[in-house]
Image (cartoon, rainbow over all chains, first blue to last red; front, side, top):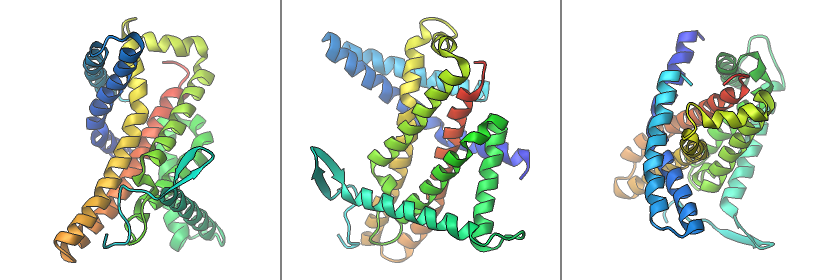
Length: 70
Length: 223
């Protein structure tokens, strides 16, 4: 199999998974936010900041994936 | 339900204070057995010009080896048995649920999260081994120190994205198959069944490719 086909298939798998990067980063943000809420009893601010940071993290990982090629 | 099992609900067994999803467990064993039988069938009478199972498995193995070579370099060959077994397990597991009366082991979040966590643990262990502990910790503070929160969220998101994609796709496929079977019997479910075979292979492929990609990041000596 040629190298082009390899690149094509990895590009395909990246494209197919890119939406999940955003969703799962927000999910991870909520998870960590809720942990912070429980620990410091500052609900709902931990969750709110978790969601915001999760969205930024999702964008950041997509940026790294697309620009950095990894 | 008509097809002999309810998707999403599991038959539970309690043992030593733990709860086991028996159907997932039994399907995992069946998948393991099929993978072992496939591997034996493909390697029992090896021929220079492969036929049948040997041909199919050699194609899959060669392809995965090429992917690993491209992404990880020669160092990645050590992980070949893990990646190839993972791919075969996922393909067989995903397709198993399409047989009436059977369910996929991958339609249970416990299976997919278990596999994802296994990959993530290996990723971090390899990263510490290859980069050294100081460099590994430093990598979380790049490019700027405040990015540590974002980098940690990214790391937590990795097992979530790996496990939920596979679980969601397989479970949704099986639920839709059941619903379509009740609503418009025969023609539409058959089309969806054919598509589900494709989806099962693609999802196994994506899980494996992302695992390779995460592992390759931790195999590099530098960043």
